[in-house]
Every structure is written in structure tokens, then in C-alpha cells.
Image 1 (cartoon, rainbow, N blue to C red):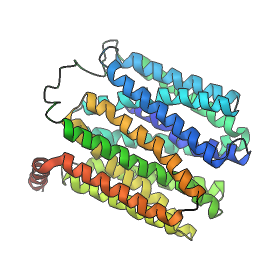
Image 2: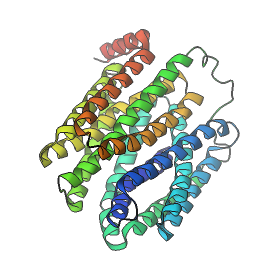
Image 3: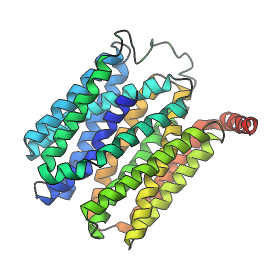
Image 4: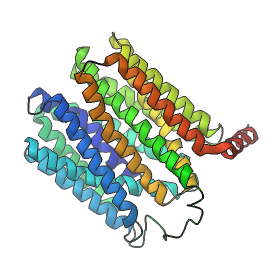
Length: 375
């Protein structure tokens, strides 16, 4: 579960570094780069959607190995050549692998006794791995450029291959098609969570894309940015730990609202940042809010339907990520910096409203009763 989740998130960590190098070398424009990112995550979403059908036919091991091999071969191809056609093919193939791995990790987490905490642990695993890699990436980028970063991604995929191969032959990511007879009764609520995850992912990816642009505007060096990202990842670990600890102690909807409110504050500071201090504060708030909010959204989806809907939950996240980068890229090209904040807030408010509908009155009361009992 942690291996698949880490590998699926790895390209998101690597993307700003190789993208910045390619833009700097004028191999691709800023707007063109945002479209390549969108293409990668769109391929991941399509792959994940198709995997929802495959999990009932093949073992978790077979699907996981296929996903790792896609990521390995795609990263190797991009390391060999960074020409635009090769990047489109390579990042598309990498997206296929990411979609497979993300879906498997989500379903395996949903099948645990405490999905909220399982998602929080998976996020912490991703954060720790990212923190370790962040100490290496700047040196690799400085010595070998974008090709070195792609080779590092391929190496990580190769290292993660043995744990997936060791999964038992009978290990299945899913269950029988008719295993969840209540799926039809909760369809509307599952769709609401699906949309909430997608919309919140648009906002988060938009914030990350905006953060990269603002770093150039504020003349922040790559070395400084690396140190800031280290602190940012530590904040993400803190958010995931808080989500796991507070799950069951406080109402889920209140915790989701807290995470979304922090995202809105980060959007405000990004949109109006005129100093590096505000920028650094906002970039630390972003992963903290993500770590609190997203494990609970996926936990809510797992509670409604731990099989098909949960597997498709990764699709929602990937579609949102695919939309977020190009949308913000277009806004930045037009210089609409202040409008970014208001659009982001409206998006986050809509996501919270959908989560509130999906949680329902009964669950809110149940969560409140549980918190009172624990208290």
C-alpha cells in the first residue's frame, strides 16, 4: 500500500525540478510545460479508471508490477531524450503507471479496519520518501540536469519493484463485483465525494503551479527553494499525523473544513504575496492542509464503498490535478494574479459543500458521539 502510494506521488515531487530545467534551457515554454503536466495526469486518470475494471480480474501483484514497469520505462525514455515528442510519449506512459499504482494503494487502504488512519499513514510514507529524495534531487539536477532527475525516478521505480513482486499470487486488490450490495443506495453520496476530491485537487494543483511561478517573480533561488520544500514536506507530515490522530476524535466534516480553510488562507497569501516571508508561510500551509484534508475525504469515500468507488477516487484526484495546471497556466499568461485567489476560494467552498452533503447528518452525529465518548 505504502509502496504503491509513494511511487504514484513521486512524479509530482520530481516535476517542478525537471520542468524548471527544461524551461530554463528553452526546450519548452511555460504554457507548453503546463500542458505536458496536464497530459501526464490525464493519462493517469484514464489508466486508473480502466484499472477499476481490472482489479476484479487480476491480482494486486500483477497490476502493481505493470504500473512500476510503465513508470520505469517511461522515465528511462525521457532520460535518453528531452525532445518535445519524446516528453509527450514518455510522460503519458508514466501517467499510465501512476494511475495503476494509485488505484491499488487506495483500494488496499480502504480495506483496512481504519481507512482514515491508513490514508494518513500512506501520506506520511509519501512525505518521508519525498523528504529523503529532496536532499538528493538538487545535486542530481545540478550535475546531470533533467536527464539525471528522470534517471533518479527510474531508479526509485526499480528499488520499489521487489516489494510488489513479493506480494502473494492470490493477493487481490478488489473483491467480487457484487460484494457491495449497498452501492446503489449510496451512489449519489459517492459521486459527491468523487466531485469534492476532484475539485479540491484542482485547487491544490493550481496552488502548486502558482507557487512555482511566484518563485520566479520573487527571485527565489533554486537552493533556497529546496530548503523551503524540505520544511514544506515536514509540514505535510505534521498534517497527515494530525489527520490520523484526530480521526474519530473530532467530526470528520469539521476536520475537512479546517483543511479547506487552511488551503484558502494559502491561496490568499499566494495571490497577494509581495514578500518572501508570506510566500514561504503559504507554501508550508499548503501541504499541512493537504495532509489534514485528503485522507479524510478518501476515508469518507471508503466508508461509502470500499471497492469500486474508492478505486475511482484516485481518478478524481488525477483529473483535478490534470485540470489544475493548465487552468492556472492560462490565468498566469493573462496576469490574473488577484483573480486566482477568489477563484480558488470558490472552488474550495464548493468542495466543502459536496463533502458536507456526502457525510450526511447521520454520520456527523455519529462522529460527534464518537468524539464525546473518546473525550
